[in-house]
Image 1: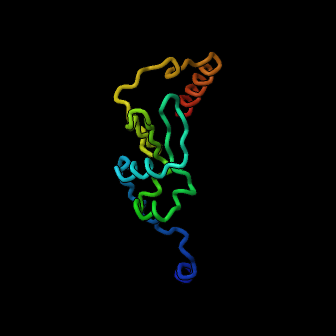
Image 2: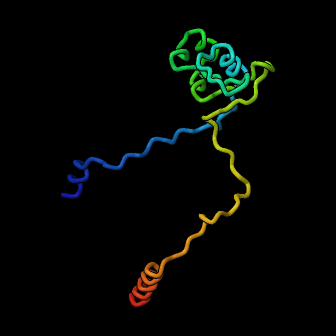
Image 3: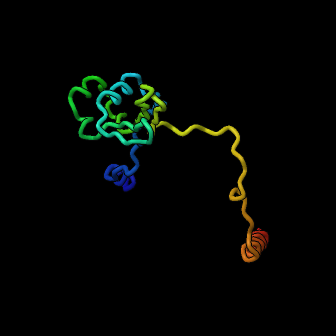
Length: 136
């Protein structure tokens, strides 16, 4: 009887977790996004020669014209940068800072990938293993 009344009063502390959001793989910048950067870029950094780095500032991203052109993709403007050659009149490279890093197929081993234990560490491991065996 006491258990039933306790069970009725008790609040459940464990609530199911909400489902995890599903992330879609990030798509490369669209042609429309690159065109908006080329047309409306207000941050132009010279790279030398006739080359420039073009970006759109936060203030410019809030422009209703840009929002209308890009819609939901407007947020991506902060991540994308275009390298432009004025003399040739062409894009050199599009840099997408928001893209996932490419996975390397076979990473080269480095001297920093391996380590050696000091004498003190080896002694500690040996003592721990002895205690573990003695406890069995």
